[in-house]
Structure formats: C-alpha cells, structure tokens
Amino acid sequence: MQGRVGASKRDNNCTGMGRAGMVDSSNANRNTLEGARRLVKRPQGRSMDEEEQSETTSMEDWDFLGRRGEKGEQLLKECLLNKGLTGQSIQGIIDVWHESWKRHACSLTIFAEYWAQQSGTVLQLLTLEQSYLTIANYITYLKPLESDACIIQASNTISTLFELMDKPMNSIKNKVIEYLMKQLVNRATKVRNEIRYWKLSQLMQYISKQATLRDENKSNSNQLTKVSLTLIMVYTVLRMAEVQMAELRIGYINQGDIVIATMTMKKPRGPVEKTLKAAQNRTICSIRWIQSWLEKGELRKEQVWRINRKEKVWSTDKCSKGVKRVLANAGIEGYNITSIRKASISETMDKNMTQIQIFRWSGHSDASATVRVNYDKNYKDIIRNILEYAGKQPNLNESEINNNYTLVSSIRRDASSLNYVQINREARISERIVPQWDRREGYASHPVDNVS
DNA sequence: CGTACATGAGCACAAACAAA
DNA sequence: TTTGTTTGTGCTCATGTACG
Image 1 (cartoon, chains in turn cyan, yellow, orange):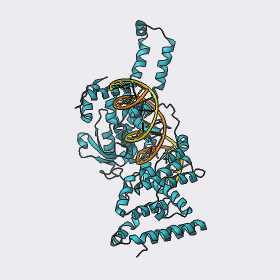
Image 2 (image 1 turned 90 degrees about the horizontal axis):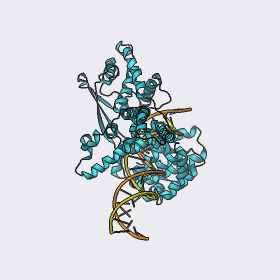
Image 3 (image 1 turned 90 degrees about the vertical axis):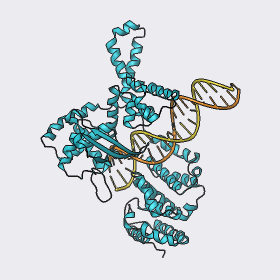
Image 4 (image 1 turned 30 degrees about the vertical axis):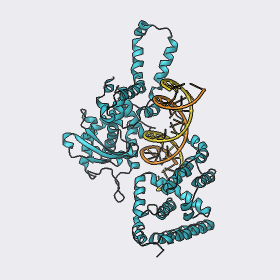
C-alpha cells in the first residue's frame, strides 16, 4: 500500500489549508510535489518500509501540524526517509536540534514553497548534483522578499539539509554562496558599542533585602522560583537554557550541598555538574532560597524546570521573564539575561581573581578571545583615563608618580584586569616548557594561578 | 509562537616573525 | 629571497535569548 498513514493525514490537512484560501497555482504545485513523492516512494516499497510506516507516521511524530513549520518538517522527513534513514534516526537528529528545530522547520517551509513554485520535486532534490547552484538561486530569489536575518537563516538551513542528505561539502559551501551572502551578513553584524554593565552588588543587595520577606514566609512560590533561578545563574554562570533543563539533586541539601546537573549546548558541549554550597551570608545563600522554594512544594523536586512534551513546568521563556523581573525589581532595567553572566564574571575580575581561575569556573574554552569581545567593555573608560593621564603629565619621574600615588594606584588597580592577555600568554609558554603538564589538571596547581 | 537579534567556538586565512 | 612557524583576526554557523 502506497498511501502511507502520514501522507493521507497530510493530504487532508493540505486540502484544509487549500480551502482556507490557498491560491490555485500553488495548489497545483503541491500536487506535483505530492505526485512526485509517490513516484519516489514506490521503488523503495520493501518489507522494511512496512515497519517504518507504522513507526514514522504516528501522530506525535509531527511537531508542526497546522503550524508554520509544517511543510518544512514534511520536506525534511521526506528527503531523509528517501535517503534511507529510519523515522527513529530522523527523530534522533531532530532531538539534537533543541531550539534550532523550530527555526529549521519554519525556514524549510519557505524553501518548500519556493521549490514547489519552481516545480521542483523531492526526487530532484535527492539527485541534485551541484547543490550550490540551487542555494545560490534560492538566495537571490529571497533577497527582495525577505529580511537579512531570514535569508541568512534560510541559507544555513538549506545547507544543513543538503549536508544531512550527504551531498559533498564543496557542492554546498563555496565562494559563490559566500559572496552572495556577504552583503547580508555585513549588514546583519551588530555594531560593537561600548556598554557599561551593572554591578553585581546591586542585584545581591536587592535579594538580600528580599530575604526578610522570605523568612517571614511572605514570598510566594513564584517569587521564590525567580530568585532561586537568578541566584543559580549568578553562582554557577550557567546559561538560562542550561539552568532551565537542569536537574537539581537535593539529596545532601541538609549538609548544604545541591548539585545542578545539566547539559551545555555551546561548545565544549556535554554534561555539566555544578555544586552549590551554603554561603555564609544566609540572605543571599542560594541553598536557603532553594530550600524555602522547595518547601512551598508546588513542583516535583527532582525535575524542577524540566519540560518534556507532556508535562510543562517553566519554559525557557517563562524562566527568562521571571529572572528579568527580578533584575527589574533590583533596579536593573534594559539588560538581558546574559548580563548576569557578564556581571558575575566582571565581579570576579574586579576582585583580582586570576583569569585562568575565572575561565575554568565560567567554562569558556578560549578565554582571551571571549573576554576581548565581551567582558572588557567596562574598562574602556579606565583606558581612556590612562591615556589622558599620559598626555597631561608627560614628564613625571618616579617620585612624582609616587606623589600622585592615590590616583595612579586606583587606575592601576582597575586596570589590572587588563593584564589577562599577558597572563594567558605566560600560561601558554609554560605549557610548552613543561610538556608533560596536563592541561586540564594542571591549571589548578600551576604557578600561574598564584599570580595576583 | 514565529522571527529577529546576539553570542561564542572553530575555522581559515593572513600578518608577523624566524629560519634556511 | 624563499620557506616554515606562530600569532592574530574576521567570518561562519549553530544555538541561546529577546521581541512583538
């Protein structure tokens, strides 16, 4: 039987959409696509296929039924099924995509519409030789129609699709595509402003004040969740999405230990476990806050924010908004969630922690490059001061500098954070001299860590 | 929810430097 | 001058976050 369960379901859906005001021409095009799909299907109709049908077309496999991404999802699955992947394998790929899946699906929908308009078929996509020509024409077609961000996304998505279809890389990404995209990408690049971040103390003082409310049992569960979430972000410098999918292990909470187990999606990716310890100051102790929150008992303890398909607790959106609320209440407005991470890291820098310690803690893999772009913005003014100072007092000798010690030392102290690049360089040199030194273990005990 | 915007890792390339 | 090596920089793309 060639009419697969999923296909017939989609057919129904399509006619439904057609009635909802689809223009005639595109309806016709859909038919060519559908027709081609059946043609492609037929030679593959083996006994294997029978098994696939039941497992790949059950209801919950369609994430975007009746939504924007529907045709994209359809296209992707058609292509990959025809490539010989099982439904389960495809689902595996989709699961890995996390946040990206939504975007890929929507973006592929645009491509599916374009391809249908070109009277293209799935079969043609499968046998396409020089994929970059298709991509290039597609990009050119989109240029007058869509925003820069949309076209960049479209280009990324379509090359991902071709990659998954095992087309050679040099037929997907080459100079033609690069040049076509250049203008768009340049326009989309953010202007690097100098931004002054808020001080962590501002947030901590606010939370500290809230602790009285907490102790008097006047905070509701919602508030406790938000503050706990914020504190976890401050202490662990995990990203929002990472905290949101985290599992809290509270077996040793009475000894003042909570383990946060999660996954990082940004590289270096993989499982991460961070331990929260009880802090001396109980008003801003994350353990105390989490404890009070759990005592409210509205959530299942081991899966605090986790969302699976059935049971939704706090989505990333909700978490993000909650934390922003806390920031706003603390008087920190107009900053995004990631600024917590930056504020935390900047705070440790101000306190003269060594760069290497900081980056081991924050999980950056190439510290100097990351910092160069993101965490030195607060110091631009200080640098300006230094330069101006040099201009005003060109001929100071050592004793005169000492006379001006208060000014100089304050500048020096603030500027000490600027030494990170040199410290890193020293670290690299040491590594070469002592080749047996293990990179991962060595950072903690290495003498560079003692630089203050 | 769909889309726009932002971030960060890794890569490729080029500048700078060193050695032949 | 040519060739080899190290260091620095910009670009790309996957993915996180914000916005309307």
